Image (cartoon, rainbow, N blue to C red; front, side):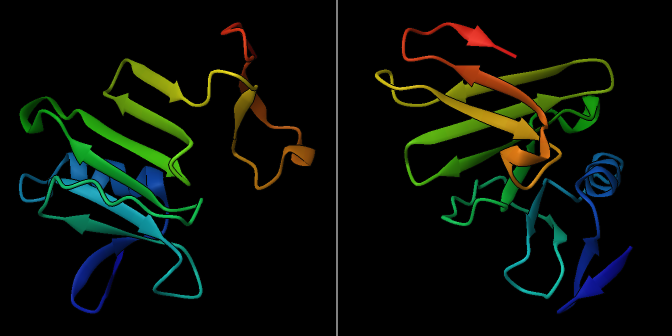
Length: 129
């Protein structure tokens, strides 16, 4: 929906994933607020995952360009990671973290006090929503 420093950009993850999914030259999307006062998603010609210490940064890569599959993830401080792959009909979420304490992720919120939908993994391996 725009450009920044000569790169195609979108203002939301959803728009970026649709735009990249429909463009053969786009191999992935990187979303960050590091380069602008607002969050931007950049189309990428690389499948290299960018690991970031900034929680809000996300990287998505196409797995199968012809099928429109995208995969992305967040990796926080080397301790917790969430990888998501999606196509038109299915979404797969893979969570990884320490095995001796609980951890969780919330969706569509900035803090847990926003009461988002959340997935919590207990130190025992039990999963709750």
